[in-house]
Amino acid sequence: MTSEAPALVEDEAATLPVQIRYLQWTPIIAGAFAAAAFAFVLMTFGVTIGLGVSSASPTWRDASAALSLLSGLYLILLAIASFGLGGYLAGRVRDGVGAERNSDMETRDGLHGLTTWALAVLLGAIVMGMVSPAAVTGPSSSRIAGSTTSAEPLLSYELDRLLRSPHRLPNADMSVERAEAGRILMTGSSRHGVNGDDRTHLIQQVQTLTGLAAVDAERRVDQAIASSRSTIAHARHSMVILAFSVAVATLLGAVGAWVAAVAGGRHRDGAPLPEWMVLPTGASQK
Image (cartoon, rainbow, N blue to C red; front, side):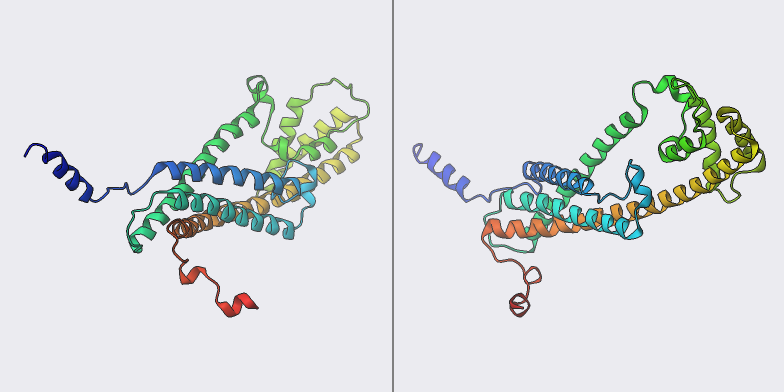
């Protein structure tokens, strides 16, 4: 009697169904890191060959609408490829349930891909949140906070032309004057544009700093206002395209991660792909 008890317990334990967690975090984390790394590689390649909606280079001002649209399309393809890789890895690596495939198993695979997508997006947002403030502020931000403006990175070329003078000392500090002129030029993109008082003050400032005659200073200020308005409008259009591309790419990345995870689960179990994933025979032959 006593010698048979352990065998009975072992038999009962062997007949119990294996409980597998609905979400397995090891393949999810692995897929998220793979998606983030692949996205970084493709993003670096795109920026290198010039597929960037916006850039710190002055040549971005000459970028056409077609290039902006092409950059947005590349961003969408990048998201589908990278999130698809992460979703496929999560679905392929996760443990199966050891039973016949059904719709619930495909749902689990798809949820692994979707969770991988969410984690990768969260990782990207955290990295961008950590890098962006450091790149913007810099180590000496407390010293120059009162003499800088948001116009400086956008309208730096216009400010250079506006305050250019061959008689100025090389080490002259004009950060305060540039900041004030930049704030005035930024108002040129508003509905009313630069008001008369600001325009007059800017003309006097240019005349004092550059030594130009009143007529030449006025002409230079008008050119700077017109150029700034065009530059700001171009930047706004680029940001609209960028925001739309990011939104579409993120949503399509979620779909790609789900589909790729389902395909990875099928390959894991040796099952054929669903009919909606396979091209018809006639279309493939063509």
